[in-house]
Structures are given as C-alpha cells and as structure tokens.
Amino acid sequence: MMKSSRLFTVAAPVAVGTLFLLVWQIICRVWAIPPYLMPAPTDIGASLITNGPVLLHALRSTLLVTLIALGVSVVVGILIAFLLVQSRLIERSLMPYVIILQVTPIVAIAPLIIILVKTTLMALVICATLIAIFPIISNTLQGLRSVDPGLESFFRMHKASRLQLLLRLRIPTAIPMFMAGLRISSGLALVGAVVAEFVAGTGGNSAGLAYEILQSGFQMDIPRMFAALALITLAGLALFAATAILEQLILRRWHEHG
Amino acid sequence: MTTETVSLRAVEKVFPNGVRGLAPVDLSVRRGELITLIGPSGCGKSTLLKLIANLHAPSTGSVSWWGGNFSSVGTEGRRLSFVFQDPTLMPWSNVATNVRLPLDLDGVPRVEAEARVMPALEQVGLSHAAGRFPAQLSGGMRMRVSIARALVTKPDLLLMDEPFGALDEFTRNKLDEDMAELCKRDGLTTIFVTHSLYEAAFLSSRVIVMAAGPGRIHAEYLIEPSMPRDENFRLSDEFSRICRDLNALLTEVSHLNGQKESA
Ligand SMILES: Nc1ncnc2c1ncn2[C@@H]1O[C@H](COP(=O)(O)OP(=O)(O)OP(=O)(O)O)[C@@H](O)[C@H]1O
Ligand SMILES: [Mg+2]
Picture 1 (cartoon, helix red, strand yellow):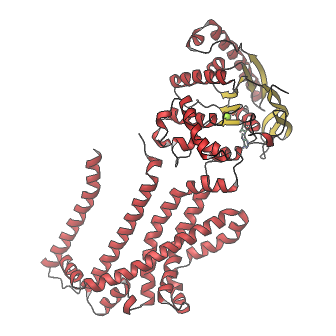
Picture 2 (picture 1 turned 120 degrees about the vertical axis):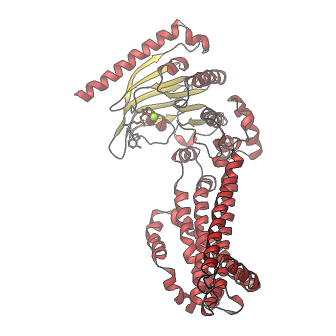
Picture 3 (picture 1 turned 45 degrees about the horizontal axis):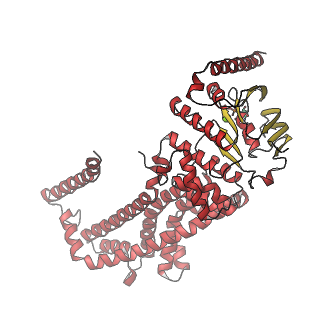
C-alpha cells in the first residue's frame, strides 16, 4: 500500500510531463512550426547539449548567487527574528520596516543597488537576499512565539532561566515554522538571483542564466532560451527537493504516528 | 507547621478581566494526604491548583509552602510537581529526555539525572518506551510519561489537574490504582482535581467539594485512608456509600448554582 502510493507520487507526474512533451513535440512537427517561434522539445534538448558548457557555467553563477543569498537570509533573518522577539517595543519600532522591505518590489530598487554596490556578485546577492529574507523572518518570529503555554508554565514552575527557555523551549518550538520559511525562501532566492541578473545584465565570466536568456533573445536563438529556462526550473526543483528532504529528516519523528 | 505542606489563607483570585475565579478560600494540606478537588466546571479547581503551584498570584490572602514563601520551593524536602490536564510533552524530544527535563532545569548533573529517568519510567510501566517520541505513543502512554516527569524529581507535593480526564474508563481505573499505590508507598502528598466522583471516592483521604459562581469550597468529606485502594474496594458497600454521599453533595452544589442563575 505504502509502496504503491509512493510509486504513484512519482509515476503520475512523470506520466503527465511525458504526455505534455509528447503533445508539444507532435504539434511542432505536424504544423512545422519554425524553432524561432516555438522550438520542439527535441530542439531544446539539442540546444542544451550543444550549449552545455556555457549554460552549465551560467547555472553555476546563478546557483552561487542563490545559495549565498539563501545563507545570508537564514543567518540575518534568524538574527532579526530573535531581535524582534526580545521585546514588544523593539518589535513595534522595527516591524514596520520589515514590512516596508517586504512590500517594496525589489525589481524597482535593484538598479539602485547595482549602481551603489561596486562588486557585481555582492550587488546580486543583496538583491536576492532582500527578496528571500522575509519568509525566514516572519516564520521564525511566529515559530518563536507559538510556544505551548502549558510547557511554558512547566518551565516557569521550575524557575527556568531565560537561556534555558530559549534553548530548550523557544528554539525547538520554532523549528517547524522555520523549515517552512526556508522552503519558501529557497525558491525566492533563486527568483531574486535571476531577477537581479536581468537588471544587472552582467555578461563575461560571471554571466548567469538570466544573461543567457537575454542574449538568446537578442540572437533569436529561442531553443537556447528555452534550454536556459529549463535549467532554472530544474535548479528550483532541486532546491525545493533539498529543503523538503532536510525538513523531513529533521521533523520526521515529531509527526510520526503508530 | 511540621506536617503542614501547603496552606491557603483567605486566598481570593480576581482575574484582570474582572472575573472572580475564586472567592476567599482557606485550605490546609497535611503531609501524606491525598486530597481531591471536585465540583462543576468553572468552580475554580484549576485556579486553586495554579495558585498552589505559584502559576497564579493571589489577588488577596496568602499561600505558604512548608511554612515559608515560594522561593524555598524546589529545595530538598520541598519539591513540587504539577501534572497538567494535557500531557504537555516536548514533541521534539524522546520520552527519556522529556522525563529528564525538570532535573535539567533544576541543574541536576547530567549523569545523575540520566540515572533517575529509568526508575521513574518503571514506576509508570514505560521503561520499554524510553527512546520513543510523544507522537509515537497513545494518549494514555503520553499521560504516564507526564506523570513520570512529575515523579522524577521525587516531589513532596504532587498537583494533578484532571490527569486522566481524556482516558477511557478502564485505563483510568488502572492508573488510579497505580496512583493510589504510589502515593501510599512513598507517603506522597497529593492534590488531585477530578470531574469524576468515583475517582474522588477511590483515591482520596479527603474530598473537597467546590461550588461555582464565584468558586469556593462548599464541603469537605473525609474517607478513612487506611482502606486498601484496590479492585475490591471499588466493589465494596463502603465505596457505594461514599459515592452516594459525594453524589448528594454534588447535587446540592449544582442546585446552589441553579438558584443563583434563576435569581
Ligand atoms: N486566565 C483567566 N482569565 C480570566 N478568567 C479565568 C482565567 N482562568 C480561569 N478563569 C475563570 O475562572 C473561573 C474558574 O476557572 P477554572 O479553570 O479554575 O475552573 P475549573 O473548575 O478548573 O473548571 P473545569 O472543570 O472546566 O476545568 C471560570 O469562570 C473561568 O472562566
Ligand atoms: Mg480545570
């Protein structure tokens, strides 16, 4: 039972995907649509192979920005959440700015950041971090707050210190919410990296996938454009899977029944 | 003073929202007593227990623990444990770590703390489940972990707020028997809140019947403590008589309430 349901969760989407690609391929071939209008999956695959080295290099650049931004988001986001949870006053005075950060479209301020910050990598990381950090802050904050009042009473009755409360109650309580935030942020970090690359338009050695998409557009090399897009999607899926697996490993025993 | 564990003098509790949870109450608990608090919902049983655990501060009146204030509670001979209505376990820790928690908080050295976990789990019949996580246990098992966590500190005063309220009657009877034996063997002073007059009749040496609106003590009922609390006691005429008496008191209390509400 267990086995077959797990099989289905893999097999069913794969079947849908295969069918989709197949229909796409047939339509392109039957109507003889030129690749510069709509490339068939095989055109994209061929482009992926011929442009492989360049695209993989670009993927590496984009992933580097994504992962650094995610790392910075986690560290800074957690620090901010801890700061905010310290007192109502701190939260009242800082929360509006966290929200301003969240509601301001980063795309709009990205050009400014890219002008102000000298190194391209740093500028890209800052943009991606600004996009990715909010779920970490808000989820960690909410997690730190959602302490079981009964357990808190128990800790108080045993005259627990602030440090004991933090390490043995608040932090473990916050972990599930934090993990959910991390999953959202990992996707946003990738979005942020790609958006920043679009705005910066940096080529050369540090060219990311966004640059490859732009270039392909200029050169009307639509299959290559799709190939770069496919790599971004795959990177997003890999990030999502990695955080989901991490979450499962950490939270497995909390939710297990039977 | 020597045998007095906890005593409340004219303790009243008015909540910040103006609700009068408890009208002035006097209560003195002697060492080795097993007291049950019984009464209709909202009559202040939990409030009374939380006042005794210092989780609430009295609005007026005073509580004293072993003749002193709360700062000395937690030291040798003056330990207090609370079993809540829910197990309130840490879902991220296994059974052994959950049971060890109060020792860790009290600063007991790790090696000694770990050595005390197993005996506590044995007392509640869960030594086989030390490595399991709360989500892997049944409701009754979780409650027993919660009790082991309360016993591991070797408390001198044990407070229990409807600990078995969510369990089926069979499990509950079984745990009641274990409780009775444990309290008797260790001479544990216990204050036990329950909704069940049968549970009160079975366990206690003194039953405090409370009335609501505002919460107050309506009557006290003494039960000969030397009687063996086992399956036979449940079937005895004595037990039926106690239950009848308690039932009469509870009926009185509910009529008091009814009069108040219709007035
Ligand atoms: N924190 C609180 N703030 C305001 N009112 C409260 C609070 N806690 C309890 N009360 C009120 O005090 C009264 C007594 O509550 P308490 O929880 O002690 O009742 P109880 O006898 O334990 O009831 P039950 O059997 O349902 O558990 C109730 O009217 C309740 O609404
Ligand atoms: Mg209650």
